[in-house]
Length: 89
Image (cartoon, rainbow, N blue to C red; front, side, top):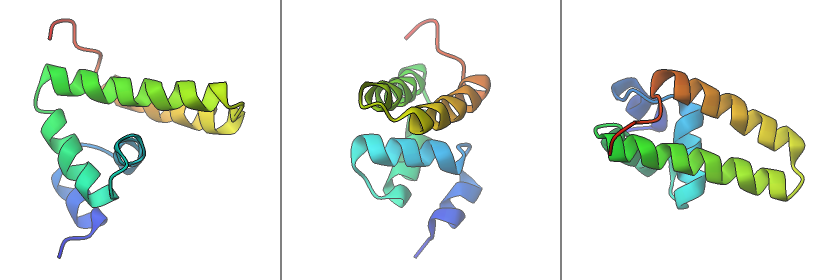
């Protein structure tokens, strides 16, 4: 059985982004890693991961979790540098 670390070695997403996907989609991290790997294969999928990040940032802001919001913003900034928002879907 593969661990999350094993999965991360084979995909082009970092642990923090996989955790965002897992939290947003209510999935175990290993399953979220596989989903994330599939999503980064298309512009529509990359757009969906952007939406997941933004949703969690908005939830943290709405609930007054300032440190959580700032942490999510840093994670999102790293994701955005690697995978800019697609212009065309």
